Image 1 (cartoon, each protein chain N blue to C red):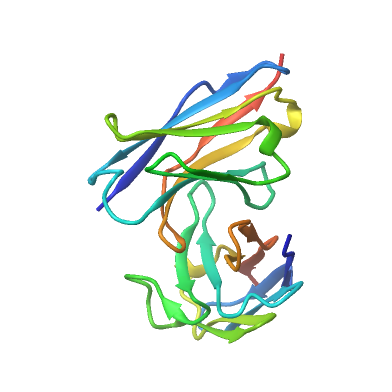
Image 2: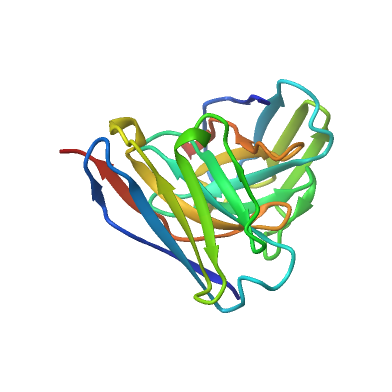
Length: 117
Length: 107
């Protein structure tokens, strides 16, 4: 059974770039017809889809974040990554990585990223 | 962007009772709707996909129905572990959106 694990700094300064990596285990990131997504959740609030990457490298981004987001995949490491630039306090959230066939069927445990000086 | 609204925001029930949760889309999403359960400190878990299909390992007390713009998640008899927040999500296009959630808590 595939497992996903987020990693990266838990504290980022305003105006800097948030960088997270999701490591996939229990299966190859290249196998099957899956997209690999990032989703975030501010404390006490709902879920926001950030964007996704296919193993070919093709991406889709939420238009509300598109100008600041880059999602990439490294199939040799079985990882995919998120970069969110020019962060503000509004970007403070738990960030999840997830596997998406048609639906988000496997999720990482989530990692809290706080934007603060 | 398709906006999903969920009602009620909070549902206060007792174990053994039936829970009925609603999700409404701002435009038709056909049957491309899923339900997720989230417990405190945990990631969401896929319960129902394509409006009415249970995901792997999901108990039969969970059922989904609806199409177009109106959808329902029913929990036939609440177990203690079912008290959680439930989100709906659509995938009619690649701009995936979630509803604000319904919290099912103890009466």
